[in-house]
Length: 225
Image 1 (cartoon, rainbow, N blue to C red):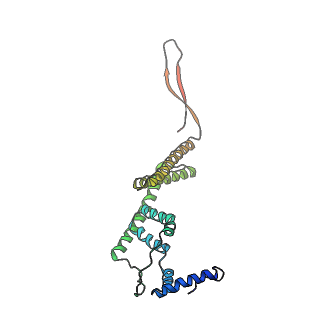
Image 2: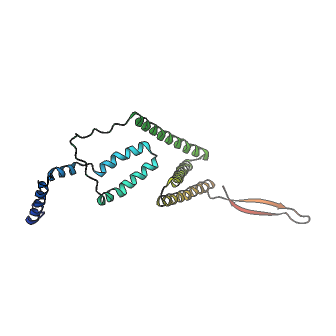
């Protein structure tokens, strides 16, 4: 059994490690086998890669995204503090890869179909918004597409905020919701200004004619739109 490469430890340190290994062998342990099992154990990254597809198939997209964020952000830091336990020693051969049941396969297919239908529904809704704005040129059509996209993102942010389980997530989604709402209003105002071309009109609100007096009128300048 290799203790370390030459130059990594001193001879005295190597002798101390060798004494400890011999003592464990006398007690009936097998250090070489234990090291081989540790190297072949399932890593946290592999376990996370196997877990996330299962969550994506059975849970909502927001839940899957939260799980993936927590695993990526805190997984490695957690495992450095709390190492994964060793696998129990067994003489059985390696287990076969898990095969989903017919019910799980049907659930995965239904989930994929719902996601596809949702994307189509969102696309149809966005097109209906753009058509409802009746764009007259490419600029208005582009603004219409942006308005539809920001509106759908706003609704998604509102839904995520309602489903958030912690105050941190709620505050994050609330900030995103506020920014999207302000952006939506700014886009609508930009479309109105573009359609008015910045022109000013004078509108006569009323005309008063009194006996023996000249007609007088009250006017007010207003922007088009």
